[in-house]
Image (cartoon, rainbow, N blue to C red; front, side, top):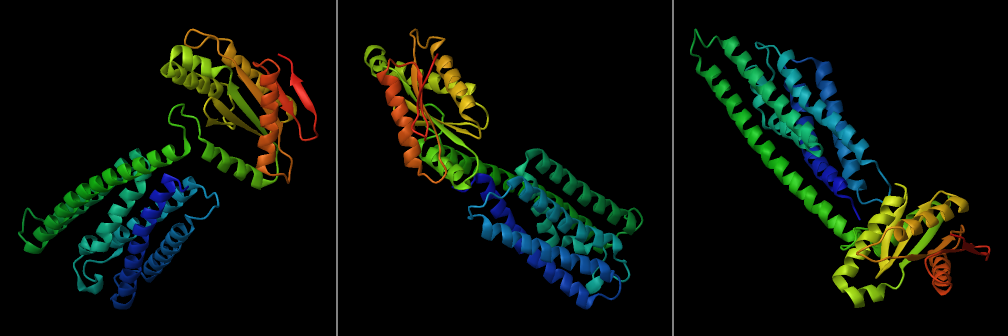
Length: 370
C-alpha cells in the first residue's frame, strides 16, 4: 500500500512539473528576447534549475508505485530546496533587471505579476504544507516579499509627488497578488491536510485491527514477507493465545471480553521493543515478530510478555496467555515458520497453559521454565 505521505509528494511533484515547464518557457523567451538587462548567467541558471525540477518531479511521479523504500523525508528536503530556488529566481530577476533595459520591453517589477511567478509562490507554500509550521512561514515570507515590492514601487515612483497611473496600477496588482496568494494558500493548505488525513485514515484501517489497535493479519503477512525477502538477519515468531477466553465471554459477556483483548494488546505492546511488531491473528490470538535477536533474548522477551499479562488482573479476574516461539530458517517458507510456532503454542496449552514453549528449526522442543 502506498503511504499517504508518498501520495502528497506525487501531487506536489505534478504541480512542480507544470511550473518547471512554464519556467523553462519563460527563461527561453528571456534568453531570446533580452536586450541586455538580464545577465546571461542568470538565465542559464534558470534553465538549469527548471530542468532539474522537471527531472526530479518526473522521478517522484514515476517511482511512487515502486516497491523500493524511498525516504519521504529525503524527497521532502530535495523538493523544498528546488521549490524555494524556483521562487527565488524570478525575485532575483527583479533586482538584477535594469528599469531602463527591462527584458521584453516591460516595466521593471512587472515580471513579478506574471502568472508563472504567481504560481511559484503557491508552489513554495504547497511544498511547505508537509509541515504546518513551514507552511505558515512560507505564507509569511510570501507576504513580506510582495509587501516589500509594493513599498519599492511606491518609493520608486514617488507617489507622494506624482500620480503616474502605471505605478498605481502596479501597486494595485501587487495588492491583488497578495490577497489572492493568501487565499489560495489557505485553500491549498486545507485541501492538502484533508487529503492527507483521509489517506492516512484509510491506510490505518487497512493495516490495523479495529478493536485492539494492533496490526491486522494482512499487514503481519506483508511485514513477514518483507523481512523474509531480505535474507539476512534472524526472525523469531511468537504466537500468543489468551487462555480460557471463551469462559470470559460466556460468564462476563462479550463487552468485557473485548476490554480484556484491548488490555492484553496494550500490555503486549508496552512490553515490546520499538522494532518488534504486534498483530492480532484472529479471535484471542496474537502474533509477535521479533527481528534481529538471538534465541536467548527471544525466550526472555516471550517470558516477559507472559508475566506482563498474568501479574495484574484484568476486569477483576486473572488472565493468562500461552505462547509458542520459533525461529526462521533461510530458504524455508513463511508457512513452515508459522506452523512451528503454532505447534509450540499447542504444546503450551496441552501442558497446562500460562507458559512458553519453543520449537527450533533443528527439531528441538524447548519448554521454558517460568
